[in-house]
Amino acid sequence: MLSNSFLSKWYGIGVILMIFMIALGGITRLTDSGLSMVNWNPVSGVIPPLNLSDWQNEFDNYKSYPEYQERNSDLTLSEFKLIFFWEYFHRMMGRLIGLFFIVPFIYFLFKKALPQVEIKNTLIIILLIILQGLLGWYMVQSGLDNAYVNHFRLMLHFMMAVLLISFTYWHYLRNIKLKINKPTISFNQSVLIFILVLMQIIFGTFTAGLEAGKIYNTFPMMNGSFFPVSIIFNDSMGIIENLFYNHAAVQYIHRLIGFSLLILSFKILFNNYQHKKLDTPDQILAILLVIQFLLGVITLITSVNIYFSVLHQVNASLIVLACIKTIYITKN
Image (cartoon, rainbow, N blue to C red):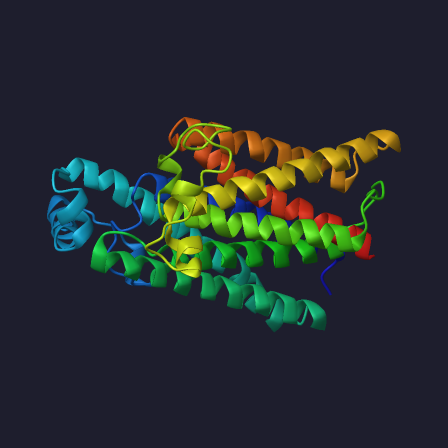
């Protein structure tokens, strides 16, 4: 049977690959590369264009879709190659993560080296990876009709990534010996913070999908007010539609949840200071949340600078891991 040490390394490397994949996903979105590959061929899609004729055919395919016709009609072949590279790299990384789990799983299964519980866990990880790929294509399809990816589908794609990385990290934690200070917050409090983080991620993906971060690029005021009723409540929309489709409202909700998490972070840091505790999971979580708030503000006031935006997205994945670790320790 495989040792806990081996299993922890397997799951741990998988988590690192997933974080890298999340960073690539951010770059792909921010460079408007996600719709450059208009077909999804899980096997033959591994081979990129190899000569000028192949590239021209791929570019011609792209030209027949709305993104080129409505947004990128002045795109050159060399510029197309760049956005194609990011989407191709993103898809290949997804295949690599799948193979990283599937190939060893088949080998260990044949050798009867996997404990029964790890067979189930690895199968779930593989299933989630496959679902993530399907959701990725489902998301891309929404942008082949109207030049913009549906922000709900973007949210589902990213939340599946959150589920995948959370599940894998949980089983990484199961297979290591944790020697760490107990958090100052309870299990219920850590779950509540995680729920707020998930809500923040959801509205973060809405903000990204609607490109709502490119408007009202001031902080802390928004449209000259802390509560800009005139822009966050659009009379032409219903209440639900306003919350999920009004660009200003989506950005404002993202700001509000960010403020809430910032306040909770300061409370956690103060509690740790009072109890003279250092290096606790909740303290690390609080520090990451403060960093995330600062990165969010910088991303906003720089009108979605790509470097800060990618850091903002990667740090979100680290926050998810910190939440999972805090929940795991307070539960056990």
